[in-house]
Amino acid sequence: MALMNVSRVTNANIYLDGNSLLGRAEEVELAFPKAKMVDHKGLGMFGTAEFPAGIDKLEAKVKWASIYSEVLQSVSIFQSHQFQIRASIEQYTSQGRTAELPFVGLMTAQFKDGGPLNFKQHEQVDFPTTLVVYHCEYYVAGVQYLLYDVLANMYVVGGVDQLATFRANIGAL
Image (tube, rainbow, N blue to C red; front, side, top):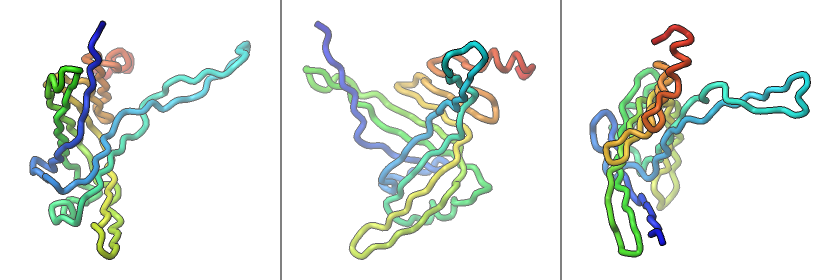
């Protein structure tokens, strides 16, 4: 009988341009490629099929715990920033915690939306921001699982370049 292995991530830290923002973000939603799908129907086909036609634009979201000058001075729609998200993946079996693996997410992004700033009496300021992501890559224990760069036509999943043939076909090696 195989042991069940459960992985859990319960906390993370975010870095902006190499500077730690420990405790300053309440929540981070990382960008992940999503297929842009198009319908195909043709003579002789009884039904309609759906096929990928590229990747939709990527967005990430950060909900800040308060108002921070480091964040406010970075909210320019013309300036890209380097974001790094680091977490610890804890793995459990019936024997307890069996491993702790590092997760690292890297994104090159611009602020798309720098607010709103919502103030409520006796409550933390609500300060969500939306990011437009041009490049993202995700690692677990030093192994790259995803690399996507819209401007370089790069899309690597599990070490396999998904766009190598496409780039060769259009003459963009």
